[in-house]
Length: 235
Image: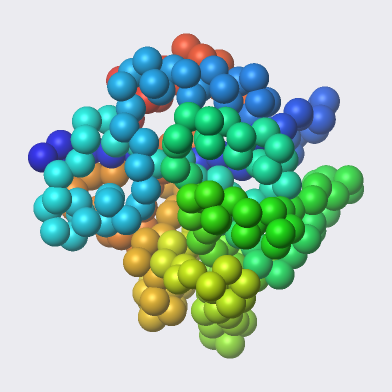
């Protein structure tokens, strides 16, 4: 049994808007394509969180260099730029949706120009072709600041919305802004999620908490050399 796996964090796959600090998490389509090529070169075995869960819970084996691709927020660019590449290469992925938003309104103070999120027609098509969808809450709220009622609404009801729209169980969650505490994690578990991803940097090791999974962030400024290091020596 291999002792380590990796979860990569992406946000937008599109063309960064010049000079905007909030574009730090945007990866160009050309760079994303090069990163997929590099992961193939390294022998990464792409998979999902369910197999990782079986490894962590039951000791099931995983292939060497097991890698899960995750995308936070569900930006519309993913449909145009990421989805075709993932389909062509047969690479699975999970997208965390902000279920009640059509734009990235949580960025309004930093980004006055709104970015569209995936619509339900696109989401259904992607789900029918193997993309997994998880919850990123209803409104991208800072969960540690929510009342108990608000917390339940953001965590449990976002799950229900996505399940009702897709007719599929939603078992994976991602904490907005990476903000969590014991109260938030307990709510996520009680809502019925199997896994939850954080912004904590690191690889997934056998003793990790399934509701506090670490990931490796990929952003605009990460060149190919640094990306290769992240996928090998430094994680």
